[in-house]
Length: 425
Image: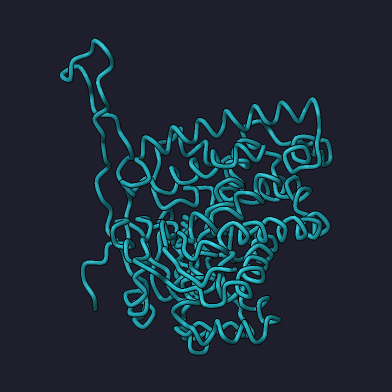
């Protein structure tokens, strides 16, 4: 059994998810326990006229309880299916334990709600994610993807993350929300600050808190604009949505805006980046897509399975129970690892093989159960369309340097990925 893989520590993911460690955990009986760790403090910068001796440490996070690691597909599915036994609301879906005021704020977010509250809010926000709305977006997605390829095609090289993978979801989510295109990089910077709190290149825990507040202020400003002058965007739909006399509260809207900016940007960006990396590392699969472009629909799901952009979500046991033969007590943290489930040999034939034609492909990269991703169809569309536009024009695109991974135990992300290709004439 491997030692030294601390899943609490974001540094354990600096070279990508520890897939070998997860494979060992799947092979052993029961569940694996990660012990708790002390809380953390930070020393703020003294204000003008204030001496360093006057500054007191500020808590960044309280004591972090230990947790059960769930790695097998069947167990991840069981936890995800039973929202009454494994609550998203009791401790939120985030691995980190939070101070009471912060936890209460995150409980206003859709993914950290349990039914019946989750059912009510999801019914309201579903108004912005109807199949008709999503289908209408594809021509815009394709137009954006084509323009992105136009901008790099003659260069012969670029950083794929910044020039391609980050651009498409930013443009799409900005259009979806009604955010001015000029402001789209605000979304990029906020989401980087949130996901990069453990990565010194991206930010700090304090920077993540500041980004959250700035995002809430922006959401409130945008909501006020749409109350006065509704547009054809999701913000207008959500602000004016009314089901059985109920509307989203201000805090519920703010948290949903937060979720859309984060989930609609980070996850798709990293799926596209990780998908390109996989196509470079499995050139025979790229050759197959070039020969059989109709496989790009199944390839989009295989990319999500392979990359699993969301590493894990946490649940909290609401009563004493048992999972995989392991006794679990009420209020225990139970953390499901999607990337591990998506490489479970019991569920996927040749699970460690990237296969663009994989069928069936019952991956859990979009979650499972009542919390299945609202934007799954949009994410599939963005991934498929981006590669439909990119691969025929830059068929020999290849890695041209070191792929730099995000330091995060929550998002399987790539910060930079230099690529080269034969420039278009």
